[in-house]
Picture 1 (cartoon, rainbow, N blue to C red):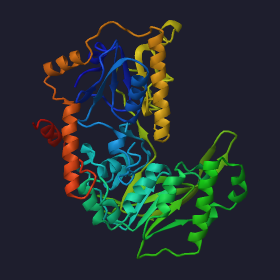
Picture 2 (cartoon, rainbow, N blue to C red):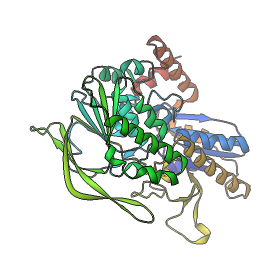
Picture 3 (cartoon, rainbow, N blue to C red):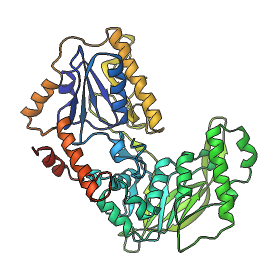
Picture 4 (cartoon, rainbow, N blue to C red):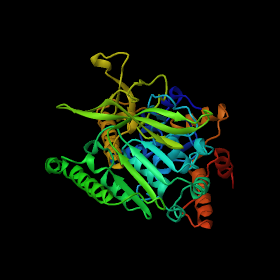
Length: 452
């Protein structure tokens, strides 16, 4: 693995994203005055590169830990959303409750990586033998996971879901998925598009407790249009579900509000998940926020699968780069990395070092948010170029990095090598009636890249 310091010596500027950089996938561009190194190859990386290339003469090298590019576009979006196909953060936020280490409990990042073919999650083998599954979190990823658990297998067969996950879901016994959030309907973080897709799943019934919406009809008048439309749709689903009983022959999802996880319950032999204990919350509103406060009332819910979808968290890329371990971001201002060792006016920022994506602002927002954020970072870099704040002398760039990699006998994958993997996956998928069949073994990827 190439160190940050070695790469930095060869480039005028470094842009860091929400993944740990290593020199495997690389892509060289034009050869002009400035050389820029981008570590990570997710959406934020490519949007930043796009903006830089559009507005100036620059040579850009992109470095990725895996032998394949695109991060979240490849590994973090539900397979039935090819129109989004938008990973940056490499860690999970913990619930901090007893039982998180019991077999059958997974972070959403692990579960999503499993069905998307992420090599590190290829051997996950989640237990889908129980009728009930619980998802903690009310964001888009939580709804993605619920949809994957409940969707007809005929829908998934036409996507690029990896084959081992498809086979596991084909044999799944899960009939009921409980999606649990700690606050109320007005604080739900998912979008109307994701929620509407969940309501339209074939042979699947949605259930919302109408008691969660007693006073909202009046309050929604003053809401912003996106929140108003989402709330109106939730009220409609709640009214419809109040008139029907759960159909045990079909699949069902249940949206539960004002509940926090307290404990993951284990089976009698302590070898697997057997349920969850949740606390009913009261909501306390202040001028700035709405807090969930435990009421002291508890409920137990039996299940064999628990997935926590409460957010991702970036990790430190290198000891030489400032990192806030609490928030999981690099201290920055509009993408310029702060010099936390010396906050004097003359050295407020680390020269030539920038960040974008989730490591810049945290794992929030949708793909458009990532694009806007990346453009901001790119324009900050362009401003520093114009003002002469970056090193413009002739630097070796990627050539020096390649020399270092060869000295360390590190196998790296070029853009041309990636094209071989890309073609191989598409051909394999075509034989199975899918857009592609993703390779989940890094060794196999490298072997394909070595093919003539």
